[in-house]
Length: 449
Image 1: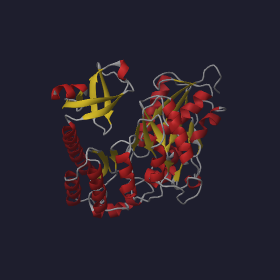
Image 2: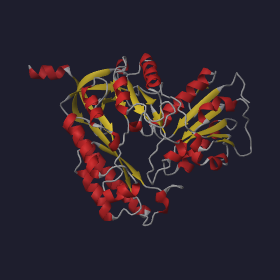
Image 3: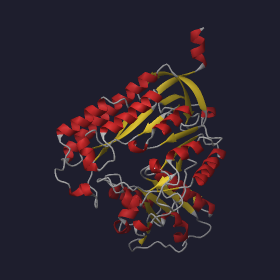
Image 4: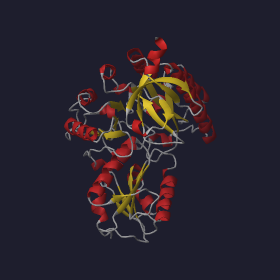
């Protein structure tokens, strides 16, 4: 049992922005209760590990992080939460050093479970409900670690993509209320944070389950329209949104807004209609192309990120090259490339014509190279333009880094007074590390006179 004089807690988060938002919320619950947050490599009385099920080696990663915690303090209590904890609680409980495993419903009650928790040589305790019973929403947002905050607006997913375990880990689609989201956004603004990133599992489905009702009470457009009115936040960035749920009106709102930035991340997963059908995605490439064209017509300088999976069952060399050439000809900015890996309790796991792992690895590399070419081409198109840059706090070998509104990574010599500030700067040249150097915007004026 932890006494009042040794309440220290450390956190390690794997996976998506949504996990970071939830970890931050749980951390605030514990610090409000008297715990002092320390670095994960420090000696702590409690280590909380928020896991992800998307990573190919979730089990190995979890074991490595538990081992790191035990090295820092062999007597520390280890609590494992998150998607992997919901999917594989009994396996995690058997990892040496794990004391407590909490599922999707229980993870926000870490504090209450700690009251009577003791270090044990036996396998960890498991508290995990049936995912079908998880039908409530816990609002979350991250603060403290960055110049931006991740604001959770939606959770769960009703889509049945054949490769995905997220519905099994997070449950049905459900949403926070617009009232609570705007309240959280205002709280973030009062803390001096300049940028909010909207996060969720399927944020385009926002409004479903807002008041416990499975039907949509509001739409994603309703949400962004209200957030666009929140004073004090200078930037709002939309995270990943399904192409079939990204409507023209939402793109137009971003174009007309002084807060929403010209940056979209739109999952593609495959550039082959045949593979998209096997994946049970809710669109074909014709719709995806239409969405990209709409963005380019409305916001020519927008950054567009794309998720893609290689090595899905039945992806022949011909079908992979169909994806490769489709993306090659698409005016997008960068890729997040994932190598398909079999997941238990998914339809794809039992599909025939598995792609050899060596071929999956080769295709992943090909798309990563293409992604780098796409990004550099986009960066070159932005040189000479004046863009607002939000500077981050890290001092890396005397340099500081930040991002433009359209997600170009820039750098300049570190200046403490620039941290968490937005400056309008001219993009000058691409550096060897892939960042872009900048000039003060006023130099552009001097050049013209």
